[in-house]
Image 1 (tube, rainbow, N blue to C red):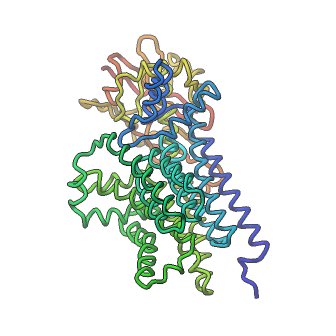
Image 2 (image 1 turned 120 degrees about the vertical axis):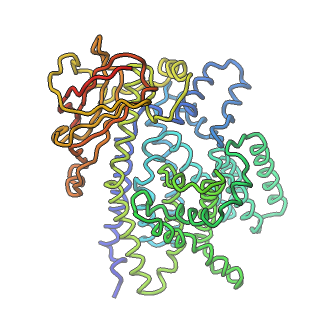
Image 3 (image 1 turned 90 degrees about the horizontal axis):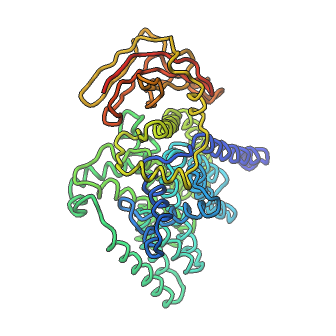
Amino acid sequence: MPSITSHHLFVKLVWLLVFVIIAAFWTTVYYYAYNFPYYDDFQSIVLFLTNYIQSDSLSDKLMLFFEQNFEHRILPAKLLTLAVFLVTGQVNIKILIILGDLSLLGTLFLIFKFFLNKQISLLGFFAIVCLLFQVQHYEDTISWATCSLQHAPCLFFSMWSFYLALHRKNVFWSSLLATLALFTSANGLSTIFIVIAITACSSIPKLHKMTQATFLLFVTALHLLTIKIHSGSMLDHVVNHVAVKSVLLLSFVGQLADTNYTSSIVPSVVLGFIFLFPLTIVLKKFFDKTLSDVTTMQWFSITGILTLLFVGFLIVFARGEMPDFDGYRMDRYKIYSAFFGIFSVAFYDSYWTLSKAGSLLKMGVAAAALIFCISSYYVYYDKITHYNREISANELNYNWSKTIYYPVVFEDVSIENNLDFAQQHFLLSDQGRLREIVRSIDWGKSKASIDATIADLPDRFVISNAKTNQASPQADELYIVATDAVDNQPKYFCLAFNNYVRSVKGFYTTFRKSVGTEFTSTIYKRKLKPGNYNLFLLSVHGEKTVSLNSIGKITL
């Protein structure tokens, strides 16, 4: 009796789900990505293109492409930014995010090529689609242009380089892609050595091997000798607290079990061990002299796991002498968690076809991946919308008061000159929905009010409403708006933090969460100019204002 997984209706259902999952992801990207820079974007996009346009020297323009961004050089991101500007006459941050995300489709195409060659099953391919096109990695694919142009593209260049090397394809293109990975992110450094190792073990002419190794090592040495590392002595960082950092590294590998939501580090450590176990299998085959049993798909997965492990090493071991129990869990690194899962599924897939139990396990993995993909929209909705709201607020704050409020740690004394130039010459923003909402409000005529507590601390104001107050029935978003007490014009736009009402059914029918009845908002004094301000609570539902309530006054 044929397996249900080979039935034509089942196959059609799987392919339908593949297209639905990919379409849902891209719809989310398009809806929540916002056309305004955020954090690193001001340096890697705004400042770069501003300096490029203002520079009259060809050599200075060329040097801008190789200036470092923290410990990275981001050459492809700058080239793409310039290309968009030259073609369209402007730079749209949302378009840059979408272009960066195309690397996910490029990587999926590689996996699809293995599928066509029958080196991975349909259910294995389906599980990979679920892990690749979920939204746990929203910082890398939805909210932040610099991350979108850096992390996934670096993996894209690396994996294509490995693919060409493993298939004995053109050495030139394999080397070029490895070099692009190196100049996309510091995380691409391992790609150079992995590609050299793959080529060294191949049957191509020795002269080609030597030429490739010489070229790649020369470029890498030049890169490393001309970049500044800001985090101190690397050796001291690596050799201290090795045991604890090793556990954190396993947890980093298994961050699909996000420790920001689980009550224990154990699930991520266990998952990390499972994801790294393919390395043990290959090592055992090496000692057993049975490496010929390892398929090209499995070697491809091993190279992916190794380059990801190098990223984890940099994040967990190399950044500081003491273990950082929080840094490795940041959502900007969740793209690597997804790829650990992807390469593990790809490696194990051939073992799951050896028995009936293996087939059941394969279906279980595919089902788990689908559940994870679907649930990620509910779990990370709060954070996705939070970023969208922060960036929207930044645009309003800059237009009103020349202030970039979020993230609070962001400081750039030259931001006004650079961003003013950018908005005049290439950074043309859209008419955002929040701008449309606040444009129609007459702030001086608001009569409604609610009770709120305003705590005046040395460096901030902390605002919260009374627990008995209803902030706004069925509101989707809450904001605190500070208006000038003299002319009643809005000056600062801050987020009010609140708990979303828990309703899984409601979310998957409306794709929204309503806020709870309590809120808090922190206004940092160093972000505001001296003056007297009236405070309002702005409650928003959908695309319209629900209510505007006065909540008090502050003085700086």
